[in-house]
Structures are given as C-alpha cells and as structure tokens.
Image 1: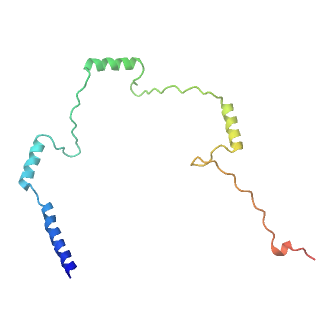
Image 2 (image 1 turned 90 degrees about the vertical axis):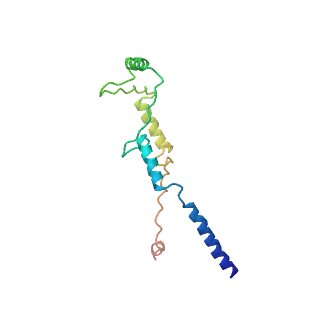
Image 3 (image 1 turned 90 degrees about the horizontal axis):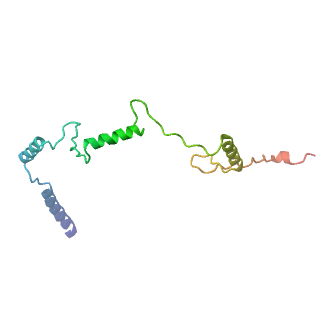
Length: 140
C-alpha cells in the first residue's frame, strides 16, 4: 500500500508543478498593446505581403551602368526575346567512329543496358525438355 500512496502523492505533486508552467506572465491587454505598437512600427506583415528591409548598394549608379554597358557590348546580356546559346564544343570523333565503338561494346558485353547501370547479363541457355518416363523407355 505504501507504493500506491507514494505514486498518488507523486502524481499530485507533478500536477501542481505542471500548472505553474502554464501560468502566463502577461495579461491579454499587455499582449494586445504590444501587437498594436508592433503593427504601428511596421514590424508585422499583413496578408501575403512580406516586407524586406532595403539593401544598400556598395556601388554608385554610374558604376553599375558602365558595367552593364560593357556586358552588353561583350554579348553577355540578351536583348528582348532573343537568347544566345554558347556554341557546342567540337566533337573529337566522327559519327562512324562512335557507331563502331558502340557496336563493339554491345558485342563485348561492356555496354550497360539496365536502369541502374549494371551490365545486362545474357539469359541462361534454354534447358532441353526432359523426356517423359514412358517415352524414354525403348519399345519392344
């Protein structure tokens, strides 16, 4: 019985200690006043609008414009709907060389054919059907 009573006492003490954690330190009016002052100072966003503090540039406007003009002259900035793509690198092999290399890889079995990159193993040789017992015995 002593253990049952000690469990009950421990439970009551835990309940009393736990209610202290739920106690609020500010009244409803204080919280409302804080929210109103934060809204007035512009610290609270409304709806889907998120305010971002302005970023201060480290360069003067004339420097940025000069860099932009230089980039346009160098062809680094596209205009309007026109986009430029860099030229493709020159191929080191001809199409025939690549086809021959692929064919030899397929014949040699070193070309991966599966999704995970492992080489596809050839299927096992087909097993010959076993003769039935009455067919195997010689007829007399």
